[in-house]
Length: 480
Image (cartoon, rainbow, N blue to C red; front, side, top):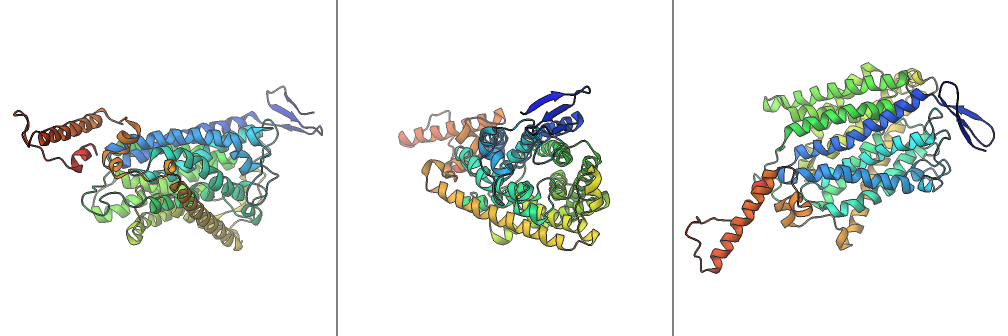
């Protein structure tokens, strides 16, 4: 009979049906739960980061989207997401429904680590599952419909995130069995979301005026960009450091290389931008820091501090230049999600194959790996490339399929109307604004339009106290 007790020190003692006891260290549980909270704060942080990069009339939509996504995935994870990703009785591609409705998820040792109970592992992994579709949904900004996004998050999490997480982290997953190294989510989180963002961008098409002077694409609130970056950077200590699932030296190294890669990535991107603009760009620095964090994610539990400098430099360089791909291929990736996350994730996976060290992985006293090129295990690079290509192609293809199935269900169609794009998603889909003055400007624009129409119905005569106004779609864009 399963039994949960506590020893004299207050540690949990779990006894299974066979009488085998597992003693959990409270510090490991505390660190993993703290990591859960740290990854949670990344989700609204991402909302603010995206919001700051958009125009004013769409600023609230991304902040809303972040909390909406968290809520939908929380239910999906409880319903069947956790079971599909981590049930140990599933296949090499996706789990089964052993833990449907979180049945039986409690004090037994988790599939991730025998050091923490499965319940702790499940809630920690939930936050990874929640931030991933939010990363991709930045691609709907300024032209997508917010309502269908609710359904999209549930479907995409089930058909894309859960299978890739199963490949990568489940003990039965094909990439895990092959020997792929992914400490905190290079493929399940970043490559999958970046590829999905590309698929969404291609499906939705370009924004009105894209590529012309009419679409003056400048961040409306750089303070939000820095605030979002700070929250993401802060939370990433739980994202990478928490993935050790234990308060140990490996977690400390993961935190160290995470911070270093972000720092070098930010400086690198900013310097690349400086060579063109001769300006010190805060947005450029923040973009580079995020790219560095993305790249170090798969390698954070496998590489040492010197390698982290290269991770940051390569991410800041490659992702910076990858932002030009949208001009080469003609797609409108509003927030450069593919360049930062998919490309950054591939950079991280490849560098992990080169610089993974058995000694660093062994900092937790348990993990044994053959290492990467640095340890003369040359086949590791092949495993990393196979994992990267599989995640990128699967996510892009499945996302496209999901979008086109939703396209033929009218109330689930993701593309918004031209009117919605002119007005902004905040007013059209939400009826709320990030700033009061945006709503005021919108009201003034509508009032002017009404006055003009009234003037037309009276034979062109307008009230004597009104000046003649020429109103076109740009009047409605005053709030941008």
